[in-house]
Length: 268
Image 1: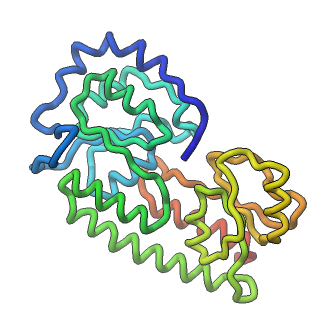
Image 2: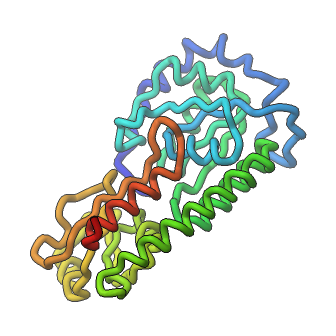
């Protein structure tokens, strides 16, 4: 997910100060950066940049999870890490980050950590979630916990999908325009996607093209909103939240999106 520019002055400034204490790491629980993973004997210590990566880690079976960027920060790449963040990284087995958060590598470097840096594809599409959770579980050695989570997730997703289809106006799949990073919510609703936009600003030509599709709903990314997308089209704009809360639970993200979608479709 492309976001705003990255600022990392705090990492560079704190690197020297933390080198002696953070550089020790935890050799017994760390894994090498390359090659086959070593067998694990216990649950890993995981540091994640945001609650989104944290929710993936929790779903995969991790229990010791430290989130660096507060949930209140909508644009994670703009966050300036604190000394406590670097200290947490120094003790971690894994550091999870997304491609649009390039400062994660700087955090690990500055802290002198021997943790394995793991790039996570953040997308709430159910197939991608299941794939990433399974991959992380393989790294963590927590496959059983991840399998149990997936069973509950699949059941909840299926229920929400059926409820939303039952709420279709006139029994017909609604036509939607969606921001590229909220396309998963259109899939959850069984909606018909007639156009996408973002993450860049929408041009007048794009607006005209999207309006011509006559969508009934516009699914907007709450974390990258540019305001009303098609204000004069008659389409209802729905705010979709991607990031889980501090409980690191992914399911409420789907439940909340379903509730907003049902409301927009006219279902109480």
